[in-house]
Image 1 (tube, each protein chain N blue to C red):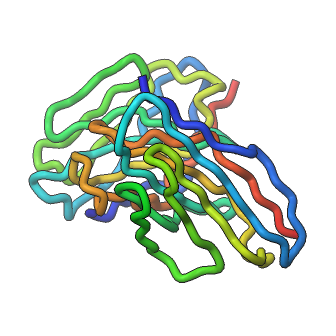
Image 2 (image 1 turned 90 degrees about the vertical axis):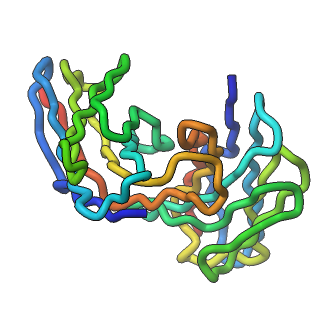
Length: 113
Length: 110
């Protein structure tokens, strides 16, 4: 799996958009970008994934640059409950058992009132 | 829909005692299952994965073992716990669109 780089921490005001960046300059053509988040003392939760097109779901939007070397997760209206560690991961999609996740340190997002 | 159950949620065990953590998956068959450990303030470390009954792959040499006695059951064990085994243990299932994690077990070895 390609390595990712994320800022260790970010703050965001409640109600504002939270934009979390991720660099993955060594991503290969068939690797997807996945985002997970982990709220304190819980298991990681899947947020969104994409290959090269921008994606949006009920939780967030994912913007992937044209060269695919970086991406941004956007939480459009952050709430206090969005305070968590956000992990950006690149991996092949599929059920290959060797296709395991490698979690780095992630970005600790603190949403403040 | 698929769900993953993991228990207990918290566990305090003395050094040298045995360990058994259980994980079960519902709503799917022949799942790929994983055990991860997370030390305080750090990322996830893969411990074991299993592609089927009786099939276990170990990623990190350690004081732990895993077993897959049934298709949807994955067990993490130790015969004698060490202080360094303390951590947050997560079971995960790999589906078509990524991983679903259990709620985790926080193990404190004292």
